[in-house]
Amino acid sequence: MSGGIAGGTSGQPLFSVLDVEKAYEVGRAPSVRRFARGEPRLLHALDGVRLDVGDGDAVALVGESGSGKSTLVRLMLGLEAATEGRLLYRGADLGTLSGEARRVFSREVAYIYQDARGSMNPRMRVGDVLAEPMRLHGLCTDAEVPARVGALLERVGLSATMRDRFPSELSGGQVRRVAVARALASEPKIVFADESVAGLDVSVQAQLLNLLRSLRREMGLTLVFITHDLGVASYLCDRIAVMYLGRVVEEGPTGDVLTRPRHPYTRALMDAFPSFGRPLGAPLRGEIPSPIDLPRGCRFASRCPQARDACRETEPVLVADGPGRRVACAFPLSS
Ligand SMILES: Nc1ncnc2c1ncn2[C@@H]1O[C@H](COP(=O)(O)OP(=O)(O)OP(=O)(O)O)[C@@H](O)[C@H]1O
Ligand SMILES: [Mg+2]
Image 1 (cartoon, helix red, strand yellow):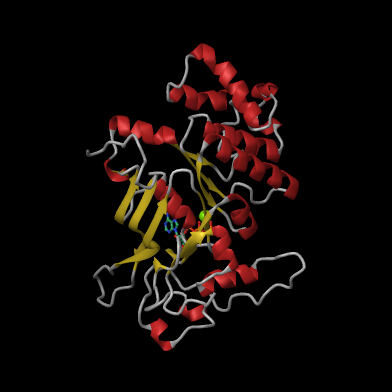
Image 2 (cartoon, rainbow, N blue to C red):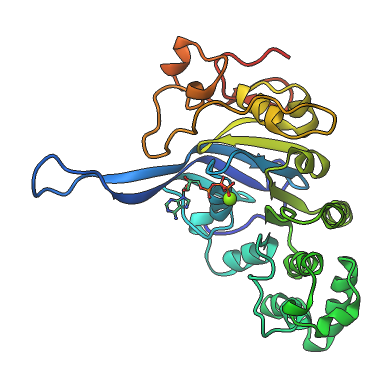
């Protein structure tokens, strides 16, 4: 079936990212010949990413700035096309979705914007912001919209009277809740969130995390959550994928990975993460290499305390490493 979305999900992941690459052209290399144009310079934002997201999973994507997390999510949302590789949603290739299948995809796959306030039309009242996806996807009659908007506001812990406010009349925590409600308005199967709780004060952050956790439980939502915060990842997500320079370098059950990291990069991220009552570990040495001139061999070798000569020669691939775990390291840490 070309371009269609399968009804059931049994036996296949909800989302499959198959060896996906994304390269951006960033100018041209200087040419040695006087008038010839140089080769295009390519920035490899994603370079062979493999990831499965099962129905009902909550997956955290973690990794330093520039590792490719947002790029991966943009591709999974179908906002940009991959340079190489394939992305499958319920078995259907995102590149071939058309007509009804594309409509189903845009209803079932939702996104919580990082900049919640900026993503809303300041001239629309909250009620209209929430009604828009319901009308767009024909989920109910016009007469049913007000009741559904009220129920949605209550579901995210806001009073139904908030429907008459403009986004500028809401606090930071309230506007994020409206952003969550808007993502839920189309009755999605999977929700992507990019740093959705970053920069909030701890009590608002905790409220939002609890809200997302209970919504997941009650609605059977699948969640892909980008975060820099390993504490948030372990609270909300049962799986974690650690990205470094355009690749997933370690993946597995969150608790397992964070108690027994196998990739030295995961270990380094954990050491750099502030934790109450424990002194901060030494920061990662060196700079993240440029995604334009990727080093030979393992791309983490230049910063890895365990690197050996072989690491600078051969690029390790992501391989199975115990139940539900995968790691891309020639010499994984012993557990
Ligand atoms: N449209 C673009 N054109 C050129 N380069 C891009 C583009 N979008 C992203 N990049 C580059 O791709 C790499 C990955 O960027 P991305 O935004 O996915 O990282 P990230 O992991 O989300 O980082 P952060 O944690 O800072 O949000 C970076 O080197 C970035 O500069
Ligand atoms: Mg990002």
